[in-house]
Length: 452
Image 1 (cartoon, rainbow, N blue to C red):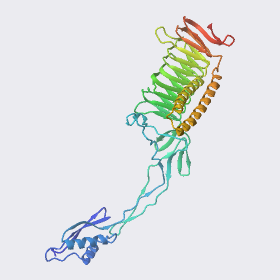
Image 2 (cartoon, rainbow, N blue to C red):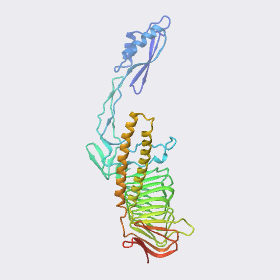
Image 3 (tube, rainbow, N blue to C red):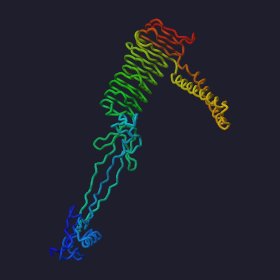
């Protein structure tokens, strides 16, 4: 009997699987046969999941090749399937976005953000239906009971609502998860600095930054922006107010656009565009400042160099510095119309240059008739565009003067070299002026100075 063929079984995974090694008969022994297989299954009480195909293939191969056939799946049971209770699953795609590439094709890490910003009616989570469990069975025919899983789901908090099986945001804002409760905040508070740890800030509501803002990072807000330290600005746009406890440093290439009021300690070397009043505590230095309202600098403050466009006027402590660059002040004129006129003028120049080139090609004797016809058609379109541009410029010229009551008030001194323009009437300061109000006189169509 020791020379007979045999099968050695191994039970695995709590009797969910049985694997066998098939040994051929030695000299004088009996080979494995069907009766032997049935007996060994009976002896080991294997009654469920018997893999007849694998067994038959293995014992025939063992006899034919007179070789050991190992690791044959003799039988396999069915594992139990866990049941799952109903729960709210967080949307796995929240916060995912394509990272922008910097110059040279590298990833711009400033585009990364640790904050999850959601839009109104965006799905935050989904109510998952319960799943029933199913008992299993091992190869011995024994029932294996199933368990019930209770996933850690989320629930809705402030500014969320249920619609069907979806949890939706009711406002635009920052998604906050606290102990499994999802809320949407309409403001974003950054406790530290803005830098690579935060990335660029793009938020639909109010933004409050308690630390400084590093050079190279952009801030866009659909509400107001409050910065409690220095603002090393690269690019900032806010729909409402901008309040900077420190100053604004622009390094000559920065752009700030404010839809409301701007308050800051100082403005240095940047371009600022504001719809309402700009209030500065100390200085405006070598900057281009545009406002549809007033530029107000404190009595101890000054405007040094740069160019100011303030529709309603300027109030400041002083203008200019003996050793600094001259400042240019423009009031009473809607700078947006001026910019639009300049843009249209440049467009008109481009059209004229194109038209002259087309005319040269038309009169060129080497130009074929078919091409000449197309050029004449194109020239006609250029002339039509030129006529529209000229009409627009004429219309804008009639709207340039918008606020004849604009004034420039200086509590200290205006240094020589300063240019002041109100409603296109200009005053070039050649001698120091102290404690003056400068305004436009409608009767004389010139600027007059009054002592404060």
